[in-house]
Image 1 (cartoon, rainbow over the protein chains, first blue to last red):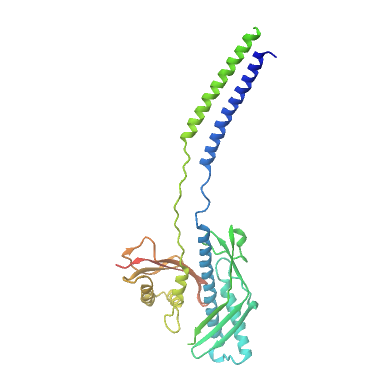
Image 2: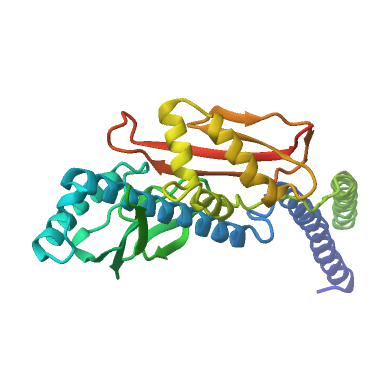
Length: 185
Length: 155
């Protein structure tokens, strides 16, 4: 191979490499800028998830408050149905009658809650009923957990009802035990 | 064409190609570097709804037999808000209006049920929360969505 031929070959290779480099480089550079421009913003702002958690806690409190109010109304209805004069808390059959009617009323009120009703099993509750001169006190204890989805909107999403339809961060567990007092009229 | 002339024309051709590519490259770089990528931090302010405060207010006793939520429900059922107005003012003033009386609006199922007119509305209300309440069985509705808003002070 002559000296001239060798020089031409090296020069040609160098020029091809140089051209490829200059051609590829601007394309990559341009692509990067285009991608940067079209890149979406941060999906979430700082602290947004924490706020969703706190809001879920607040939603949970409103659900627990509804349960308390339902229990109060259910106990009032039960006393009205049986009659205050017929209630004898020293008599086991009287207590059983009260609790049976209370459970039905309570369940009925819980079913009226929007978002599909509150699904609680009455058989999982232990009820303690007490009375003094002015008030009835009812304690409803349960180990059951009421579960709502941690979702980024204002809806209350019960796991038992419709949680699958929503995109969730997780679940929030609540204990729906209650303690209520109602005045004797 | 002899061999030397061919090699020279080949080198000329490559030279033109490299020159054109170089010009295109510069055009591309100049075009894209003008499109600057700008990033900015967007401010987003959100508040808690303070349902806990509302629930505490609703649990407060109006008298020995009634809570504030009972009063609201009874007022709604009887379509009368005179007692509710008095008690609402007496309840909300110590909580939010230490120096001046606060104004308030009570919405039931998104309709204004009772209010105290406002004179000075704050950019962020003292309270704007809602809860769902059950209604007694004898009433034709099952539940109400109660919303209480405390937007500022009275005149």
